[in-house]
Amino acid sequence: MHVTFCGVRGSTPSPGPDFARYGGNTSCVAVGHSSSSRPVLLLDAGTGLSKVTPLLGGQAFAGTIALTHLHWDHSLGLPFFRGGDDPDARVSLLLPDQQDGSDAESLLARVMTPPFFPIEPGQLRGEWTFGTLSPPRGGAAEFKAEGFGVEAREIPHKGGRTFGYRVSDGHRVLAYVTDHCPTALGPGPDGLGAYHEAALALAEGADVLIHDAQIVAEEIAAEAYFGHAAAEYAVALAARAGARHVVLFHHKPSRTDSELDAIAARFASSAIPVTVAAEGLTLDLLPSPPATRTSARLLLLARQMPSSATPAPRPATPARAPRLLLLSVGCHLRSKPSKG
Ligand SMILES: [Zn+2]
Ligand SMILES: [Zn+2]
Image (cartoon, rainbow, N blue to C red; front, side, top):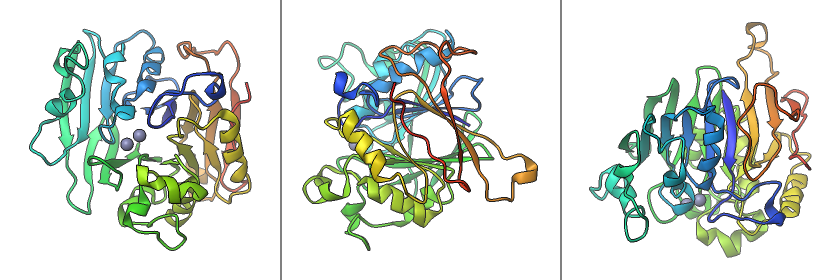
């Protein structure tokens, strides 16, 4: 499984030099089967969705977009997705059923329609289909998408039904739990929020847990009201659920690069490797060789691609060699965001 972080910011984009290294685009994570194939499953469609087009090698997008929820920072990239707004595109868009009788296309059209925007979802070029997901209360909606097995579970957030996703390629598991407000279910045992069944099920044994880290522990009292989790909760959830690597995601729009460096430093000695998500970061979740499948060693390649305002298409041989970091759970090596 190959994972590319195309937008890592929450709430609203953060342009400017103070945000250049971690990136200012809102939530979008692209998933493919390998580093040599194009992404086929996109998690959320914030402004980072525009960064998927250069990964398509000049081809139209053919795949699935699964939205965790419909907030602007997860959906407003859709009409600017050139690889999807293409006569040759084939896009299956899935979003949470809001349980108000609206179909998926009508829900999207509430935010994407004149006079707020020039076109409606149905006017996107290519073959677009729109569908809702509706897991049973306390359970999971399970489906196949582009060769991946996907589970959707409802998690507490604020203002609309919200899902976390668990994606498996049969070898590795990626959990994507952004926009998650565990304090909505109580303070939990440590004041960071409840370690509730859906969060634990999504993260259970995951090779990588991408999790909401919009705030930090000391901001909970003043800011959890906005519907987000503290970075400390993400790491503690991973420990409880047996996840092997945490990627802190959905950064507060005002959080500067140096402040995110400080958050990375806060977790430098964590027992579970912690990475602060940066736009352009890629992760290769490699199937274990059979001989090592039962050992504790999990090899995971984290590659920090150079960040730029308009990333170049992913070349077979990058013009500038990416930093390659070998992460091994057994050795506790960690990746750090590029300083470049
Ligand atoms: Zn958000
Ligand atoms: Zn949200």
